Image (tube, rainbow, N blue to C red; front, side, top):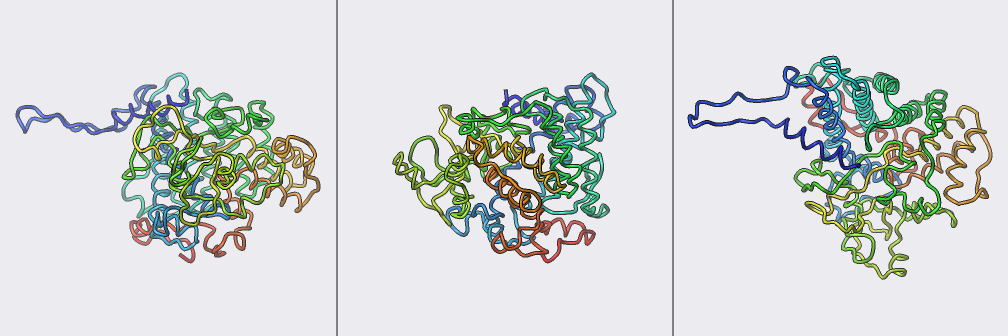
Length: 493
């Protein structure tokens, strides 16, 4: 089921290609064909294809996830050598500059997502049909999602409402301040929530709960804790989601654990269409998974990768003895070798640890294209445990320690299988414990850097982090140049 929304994108891609047909007479040619408001959005099918195209860019967020870990204290860049994907090495060491092709990818791909979603919103009133409100609401969610990613990475960004960006806008539309970007995201999500169905119309698409969860997260990042808690509690009280328990929890990041009761919003990947290094964003597979696998691996269950994004020794040591999350999160190659005889080739900055949540796994069917670039592992962008921990943090910060403890201990009871490890307390100590719980629960999932920044803990925690600079990343130099001086670079870059 999860493959349908992915493979359907190819139909939109075919429509989007410009075609030229020739007759025997070279001068007699059919007119150039292109999609525009004049010949598109005339049917429900047109809106659906455009929506699929807007979803498709989500697959490019693999780079946001892997760099969200590498930039933090959770993992090291890794790879083959210090020259392997230099942009990632620089981000790991906090030496990145405006000249960084990997940061440019984040900027370009997220703005591509914004423009695809805005294309639908720009012509939302052109054609009426039953069910259009759901499609427009999904487009608004995606518009908000891509804008929020850019806000997290770069701070203030240009805004154009429901309209698409066009060539030349960079010289006339300034970067909005962060409050205005937050306001735009919140507005999109509020409108989306009003029209989204509680149950998504198709696996991989957006539900009301996903939009409420994202809005709660946005409030949390903005510091509006009194709004974040109740919004997140809408998701909790909906009865639509629950934590995966017991042995099923151990398989949460396996294919059998995809799109389950813990999934609030999950980005779909497949291995049916391959890609190459010349166009990583063209892959329908999760590129981050292959990059995170052990080099030259020989053993059961897993396959080889490129040994990037390796957990630090400190990160691997944070789990208590009875915490099941360590086995879900960390693959200790020394222990794995003793258990199975598996071997691998240590890469750059090797620690002997790998991210077990997103690691290339053996499969019976043959993947298309480069095996390392077409892994089908879905990304759990928002899962229920994250919602519980965000709600716990919001309530702790607003003085409601009863609710905060209820939600954080629900997560801990799943992790330990008992109530003997429940947290207690209130105030700043409880908030600090909840933030530590976020690291334990979400390690390897791309949230850590942004959690440290938004809570003011990045300086002194992330090696090489410079306060009043590294809270955001530099705007790509090309964008600054294209704006002809309209956009200022982020401070101290």
